[in-house]
Amino acid sequence: MTRYAEVIGDPIAQSKSPAIHNHWIKQLGIDAHYDREHVRADALADYIARRADDPQWAGCNVTMPHKLSVMEHLDTLDPLAKQIGAVNTVVREADGSLAGYNTDAAGFLEPLAEDLAQQQYFRMARVLGTGGAARAIVAGLLEHGITVVLAGRDPAKARAMLDELDPDGQHHVAPLDHFSDATDFEFDDREGCFDLVVNASPLGMIGQPPLELDFSHVPPGSLVYDIVTAPLETPLLREARDRGFRTVDGLSMLIGQAAVAFEKFFGVPAPRSDGDAELRRILAE
Image (tube, rainbow, N blue to C red):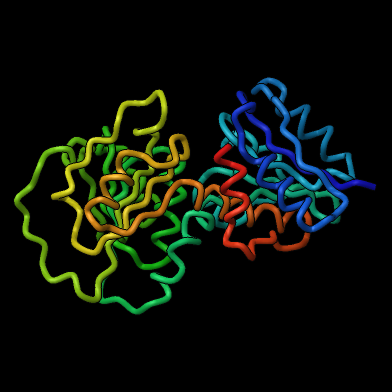
């Protein structure tokens, strides 16, 4: 019998998850499919109860607004999901129990693996945004010994997040508009350091205001990472490339987190031998 998984949320029509997972299912030729299901907040408990009784249901990805509320309907939580405080992947285990995971941190970190495998004297990330995605990103960065400067419209919220995730860490907060004005700060010799600048906010997305970042705040040799996927080439990434910085776009995190979920759903790794080139072409259509 055909196994299936799906993505749930409200709204859900915009999700790219079906295109990603069904591409991999087709590549592998496995007997499975991946759908989307519109689930309102008042219907979440009933949805989980019905799916939990279906042995062919492998699980679901979870998008807004259910990443927090779904946790109360699960039997177990992965430690990282518990730390982040949000679940984006529910897996029906062999015994019928439901386990909650957060694959956002792993998906975010995937394109940084080569950099993080190197030895560095110091690692710092400037993370712009304090929402749910930022929380997962910060949690992932902390696992790799990265000092974080977290910027948001409300610095108190940023401080509370850092104090909760790493109460003994020497991290910093700043108002988001701190990075919009030019600075005359002279960066020291960054040889042997890893510097990362992350837009973890929706700023720059279609329909949202632009992200205001003056590049005088970006250390030489930094990697600039924008998790926005629409547009894929954001003004931030365009300017970063024009200035000679390495960049990572939002599809990298989206595909990376989906690959972790895919293996949990279907028990086989996602086929990615072409470096996701064909999948990126499909998602750009």
